[in-house]
Amino acid sequence: MRILLVEDDLMIGQSLKKVLKTHVVNWVEDTFAAERTIGVESYDLILLDLGLPKRSGIEYLTQLRATGNTTPVLIITARDGIEDRVKGLDSGADDYLLKPFAIDELEARIRALTRRKENRSNPVIEYAGTSLDPASYTMTYKNVSERLSVRAFGIMQTLIENPGVIFSRNQLEEKVYGWNDEVESNAVEVHIHMIRRKFGSEIILNVRGVGYTFPKMQTTK
Ligand code: CA
Image (cartoon, rainbow, N blue to C red):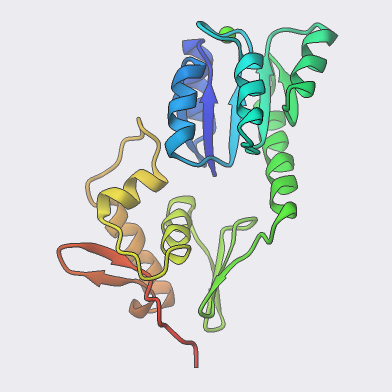
């Protein structure tokens, strides 16, 4: 899952990045940086602090919703006044969590919010006989069902949602890793190798010197 964390407290930001390691977490420290990345990348969830420099979380959230963006927002805040919570929910937040919070609870809230989001649309992604279930990170192809790692699933999702489009290694890397994640130089190849070993090499085409693609005309007969 791709999460945008908007948090100006360095200790909280660093520890959240660490504990949410099964997700792709991009971390910004103010709402203007959040606005910039939201304009060019898509996220499954925004974790939003309220007390932020330059512009408050509430102001940002109000503006985000005004532009029609429906990404689920979970407010994480130390403000415990009822008014602040109500204001947050009124401004378009989906849920809130008071600091300090237990990581288990944060994970549970994240799951609940993204379930809610997935229920709004068809959660399973399907194309040409291949299906991906984001709820369980499971991929199915020709009667083979396997659970993939988060990164491998992200690579597959990117390819299958854009059949016939060739993605370079760097483009795939950007899709499935956060900005500050340490990425081994051949990480994408390793994930692709693993996917091919499980489902057959025809599942992802390697366009030599250019990148990878999910073949558009693939049939399952
Ligand atoms: Ca803060």
